[in-house]
Length: 433
Image 1: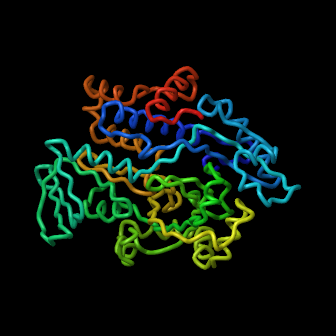
Image 2: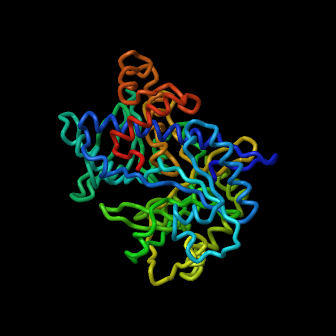
């Protein structure tokens, strides 16, 4: 729901939701290409059909959700969205959400049957397995990039350490992509490119409640999203999710936020202090002063007891009991802090692509892109770093082979939208039930 904020005039802004929905269709087309070409095998390994719902309570939130539905439903990408204020209908969609709820409580929900659950671990392993089979590709795991410097000839000298053998060596690269999650910012700083100056990072950790009761897990089949609490960051929108983990159905609720100075789950507590440089200290201080609500929210989250977390869960699953849930720790998100001429520095909650002027290096900062945006972000990177190549007939033809709607918009083309979704749903085996 944070993608569709309510404006001061009472209308709902839907641009970002449309953009993300467009991006997801791009991702599905690319994955369909991988399947059709036999580059990866079984789509069920990484993508499954799971209805997506939004659920709210209270008159103000119900009014908002109705306006949101009316705005989105006009767009071809969301024409299949359903809306209801009928408790019996919501009970059919997500029985656990309604079980034990006050009968006179005003509620509303929307549902999209086209929703999915994507397992990026499985997808990545499948893609790596294909890459390993190619003659000119080398994959190195358990290696750490210690430093990188640009040579006079325009190439990059990369210092690498094998974490298993402790061997150190150098590699030369014409192009470098830094996609190291929370580890991207320190590497970008080491590259010393002008475009990377002024960026900082603010690490936020995540926790989830995982259901341990098989009877409860079997009763829920949806991803149910709510509204973020006042002062909470956008990525903290609570959701009750059916997930497929290692081929087994699971039920998760969260996220609960936390704070650690580590940039990676298994990183160092010195990651944040070490990232502070002369060129980014002002943006970081400015962003901190402008986000005191976030600081307050994180302190409250860190201090939560198991009973506090249960109370948050009960808003979505009224009959929840502590004995049926256990706390799981997720990874770290390093949110982007960047320079701003007016404010000094701003905290960004999305993903930021930073590239050198000559296109020889690029880094992906911020929250790791999800299923919706991963492919589109890499297309943006190609456009930045390989602009001339991308403009050639050969590259354009390859892009259209992988993504048939490349360069087109589905939001205002009902026929193309329907045809594209029908094809990808068939190939990815996520047709409507």
